[in-house]
Length: 226
Length: 226
DNA sequence: AAAACTCCGATTGTCGACAAAGTGGCCGAA
DNA sequence: TTCGGCCACTTTGTCGACAATCGGAGTTTT
Image (cartoon, rainbow over all chains, first blue to last red; front, side, top):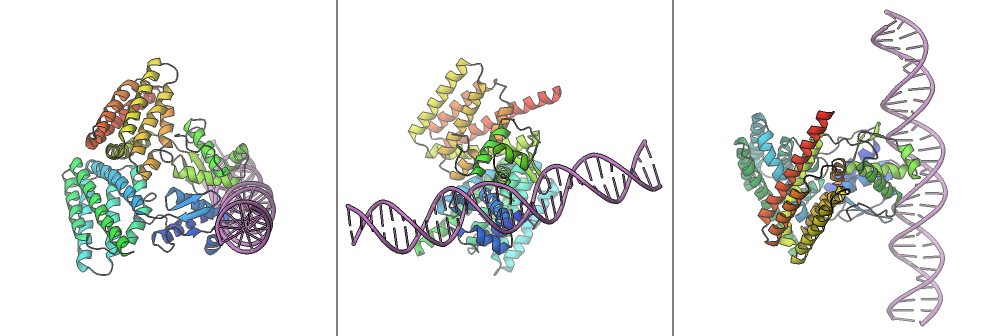
C-alpha cells in the first residue's frame, strides 16, 4: 500500500518505481551518479521516459540534478534527516489532530488491532525487525488517511516520504525502540479514541521527536566508528 | 525572489517557469487541457523538454496528469484550498517556532522594517493591493528561511507553494484583511524578538486560520452569486 | 615543477518521426 | 429515433540520432 506504484501503465512510471525502490533499499548507493544511457538500457527503454522518471524522482527529493552534470542519488546527511523529522513532526502532528475529529470509531478500533498485530510480531521477535518498521510506517499512514486531507496524505504517503523509507532502511537494525514506540502508538490511539485532538497532536510530536533522538544517537555512533 | 526560476539554463526549466507563471496568473484557466504539441510550438521547443516540464509541474501540484489522456491545469476547489491552508498552518507554525530560536536579532529587526514598508504601501492604498499580497508571501518566506530548514524552505517557498500564489491571484481583490493581517504579523515579530517560539507558532497558526476563514467566506459569496 | 591551456571523450540536452492509445463522429440497424 | 459498433483523427508515449556542454588527460609554458 505504501509501495508507490504497483507497476502501472507508462514506462516512465515504471522506471520511477524501479529507481525509487533501488534508491530506498540502498541498491543504488547515496551520492552515486545516475547515467541516463546505462539505466535506460538496464530497464530496456529509451532515454526519454527515463529522463521523465528522473524529473519525477527529483520532485520526490530522492535524486538531485545539476544542469548539464546529470543526476545523483541524494545523500542523507545528518542535517537533511534532521530537517525531515522536523517536517514530519509538523505534518503528522497536524494529521493526528485532525484525525481525532474525523476518523470513525471503527477506524480507530482498527488502528488498535493493527497495533495488536505489531505486538505479536514483536513478541515473535528476531529476524524481521524491518517488518515492524514498515508496519510503523503503515500506522502513521493510516493516521494521515484519517485526516481526510489529500495533501497531507500525498506528502506523508505516496510521494514525499520515500526519503523516510530510505532512512528506515539504513537504520532498521536498531530494534531497541520498538517497544517504547509501540507504547507511544497506543497512547496516541487512546487520545484519538477520546477525541482529544490537542493531546493526540502533542503525543505524535513527542513520538517523532523521540524517534529522531534515537536515530540521531545512532548516527553519532556510526560516525565515531568511522 | 519568490518567483521560482530566473529563466535558467535548460529549456525544460524555462518551460516550467513560463507554464507555472501562466497557471498562477490565471492566463491558463483552471481545468484547461494542456496540449503538448501546441505548447511546444508556442514556446518554440520540442515536445521532449515540455513533457519534462509537465512532469515537474505535476510534482508542484499545478497540473494533474492522467495516463494516455494528457495534463490539465489543477482546479482549486474549496476542499483543495482547505487542505492547503491546513498544511500551511502546520508547516509555517513549525517554521515560526524554530525561527524564534534560530534567527539573528538583525534578521528579526529586518522583518520589522519589512512590515514598515508594507504599512506605508497600505497607507498609499489603492491599485496594487496585489503588491501587499506578494509582500505577505515574502514575509512568510523570510520566516521559513529563518528556520534554517532547507526542506521547509523548499516546501513553503520555491517549489510546493505556487498553489498558494495561484490562490492569492484569484482572491487578491479582497483587501479588507490587509490591516488585521499586518497587526498579526507585528505580533509574530514581537514573539520572535522575545524568543518565544511556542507563542510565535500559536500566533502564526491563528494568522493562517484567519486567512483561511477570510478566503472561505469569499468563496461562499462567489458561489452564491454563481 | 607547478599552473594553465587545449583538445578529446563522454554525457546530457534537444529534436523530429514513428507507434499506440484514446476520442469523437458517422453510419447502420433495431 | 435511438442505440451500438466501426472508422478515422487527434493526442500521447516512445525511440533513435544530432548538437551542445562538461570533465579530464595530456601537453605546453613560465
